[in-house]
Image (cartoon, rainbow, N blue to C red; front, side, top):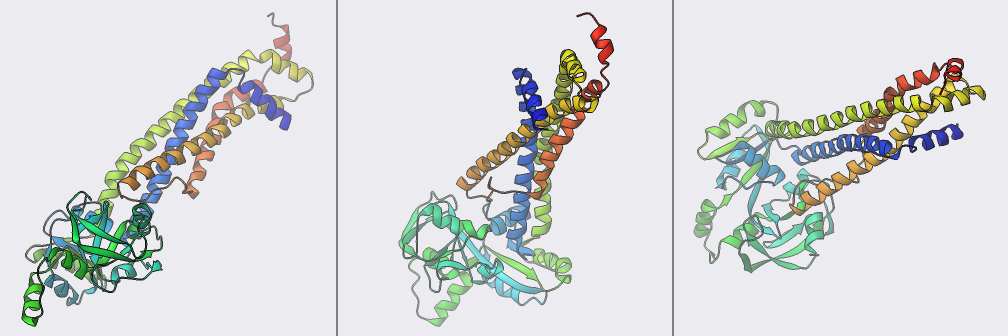
Length: 403
């Protein structure tokens, strides 16, 4: 068997340009399919993790898709603010099991500062790897990625930048103190800076020092949050609560499951195009391998006839042709997987620079077994007719044919 494979390998590279072209086409097609599998699976799992029991996002009037992207994935700007009183209004609803406030507006080196309550951490079952959760105003907890890229550790202080792009004016007079760094969870929390709602208000309410309870009440009435993440108490909430929210002045409900399905359909169109491109490359590679194998059998008829005369059975001669195609498929599989993971890693670096969804080339998927399976199947199908021609080779007639 080893000798057969070694001979097939030498035959494969006896025409290096043809072999290199076939290898390139196969590798590109397999790489494209591997890339689609890796990226789509990681995006789907990231979306599932980030939803984490969030049934509804309540924000200011505007696009539900924008509200969902801003409130769940933190990939867009919010549509505006809503009164703090909305939070209590939601919590009093019998259909609501939990309502978690979010307050956005500032950032740290492009990483969003999110004011919330510890319930937001419980939503993702996140725990500090170092330090503790915030307990007082202007205390902050960094997500794993935000801490790694900013270089900040427990005890460090920083000034937030106005706006979500990280290029606004810094609030140097109200500096945050890092009190904890979250363990890496693979969720949206990894790229956030978390603090209490009071911290966000303290940064933006300059000069509002107050001791009187009446002044406190007036200030609370003016305070706002950006949105609220709502969990239903039961199935009835999905049918009634969004309609009730949309009927309230200035409020807009966004169902993450519905908006995410729309988003994935839009993204899926691009992945289908890329997958179709990969299949087209594989079909072109299969046709090229078929033509090359058929031409090679015709050119090597004398060599194959000599093998038959030396005692090689027809199946061994046909196996030599199949082994040549399989060698090509194995090498293309290795190169295709390397290309797919390399492209995924490159995309992950781009997304990380934009503080977007985490994608890594180190991800391995069970569905990737389809890549070597496709390569082997395509190699065998392409070599089937040439191998059959070699199997049916008439040695007597070939030797009687003048050269």
